[in-house]
Length: 140
Image (cartoon, rainbow, N blue to C red; front, side):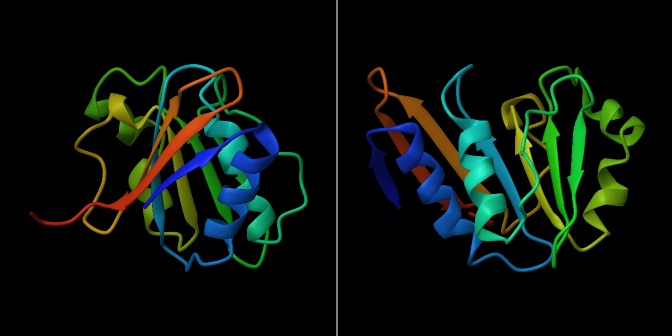
């Protein structure tokens, strides 16, 4: 599915729509350049999940946890250098906790995602305009 948004509000609204459809154990891998709207989209997902806490980028903490009917684990892999770092941050433990895992800078950990991961590519195509492509990783 490909979407075009014209503002930060629209980007958040598209994330909210996705957030309403998620089930425990879902992993979302976000891709996009700095400032593309990954955290904005995540804020919308959280809103769709009924989470009312302020959502911020976990750039320096690697992961932020938010409580809701389904917990949300928001990762930032910008500073992750290799697959061994995933063990250090407890990535595999988070996968077993039954929450929703959202990962910014997914391009830094290409082998970390299982089949059925939802991928979201956000591309800046204007000052406020974004092209958002949502897919599911398949075996093929």
